[in-house]
Length: 585
Image (cartoon, rainbow, N blue to C red; front, side):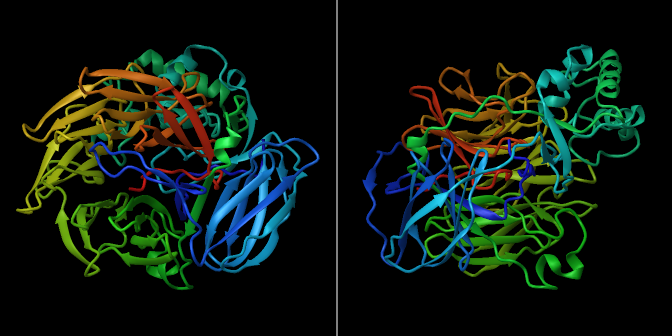
């Protein structure tokens, strides 16, 4: 493992595009069936290409070749196949080229590239000393804008989590949501562990409202976790014994190598478009935006394509912004939201081109649904997401959103356990509480029948909301309870989602067949898989974003339901989450 890797949560200062080198790939454009078309791509006028050879004294596999255009703030990354690589459609400019592989790295080469150039590059790899230490962020699997990087050592799961009653409790409670590395990375005293469990059980919620949607999730009445008084005693005793004040911070070592197919990787290319740096005294460096969650840095969360192929994203740094990228030219634009200190998590574009962003406000501030008109570049809509306070909590956050066939917009109250409906014709807002206690809706998608499908992060259930009758149905997968986010619908109207690994329990992709209401799960062949978002291409493959660990990089995964095979594409940024993926039309 490479100790230089750093685990962090959603620190994605770029917009990432995956494409096939040498081909035009037609991706998802809607729910209707469509023929698959793949054609050889001609050279793009005004662009350049690059190819080369990577050598080393020892064998390596699927080295990652980083090709950075320093003028345009664009990073291209391709993979080697048998030591060879090729990158196409490069913008002219000054480049820095470097290569990494497991246990190897190269020096940086600088090169000026003009339109029509096709330089041949030779790169030599040098060995990098391996270490049993790395840098981790215990807050990676906690829904927060904060981070807390610490040094950790790595060990086997069984060594970090010796068998016992406390481990059994942790594996069906804490580890489901926080993952296997959260607990051992932050040892503490008995008082500290009791305070942590008190928070999860909602001890302070008797005379005040919850400060986060996790607070109070682990109560004695939470049936999905089956948490008893004896479980609490066993859990705290286990934490103090194994992760007490004298224990070193540790993470579970990745021993199961992620399978990589060089032939497939050799045809793929990533492009990262970095958002501009704010000048001194402006943007994130302005005094009025110096404090608060997300302050001091830019942070792209959600990305969406419009009908013209432009990409819009939410910037959760303060001030909050809507950003736009034209991937064909590299041009970028951005607009500050009407309430710059209120968080914005999601972006959704309606068929008429309007761009919608629900707010994620704190500190007693109201959360509004924002509508941006890209034609006038004005915020045309600014609507309270819960005008009658159906959600009875001082802190409540809107997050995911989806349209029905009438273009009514639905938003999930991730902090509040409810679904809001905004009627486009009348401007009326109606809020529907969810049926489950402590429901945490994380991801909403509409099917062809105008049903809304919602992932309940608080339990691992999938919920269906019938927009015709305003009624709910819950579906419990075989792997339950579990951590799940962001369901999606395929071209056959089936519902797909990911289930995160929990200790020895592997990560899964799940499919609910709407014709039979049967749920099928597929095990992801990767240690500690953390499938975030899912999306189907026109060939029926399911693509998913896989979050990183401290010693295993972030991935984009592809699952072929026909032969049930998986393909993994390591991302350029080792430790960057990908909360949302979308395929081009």
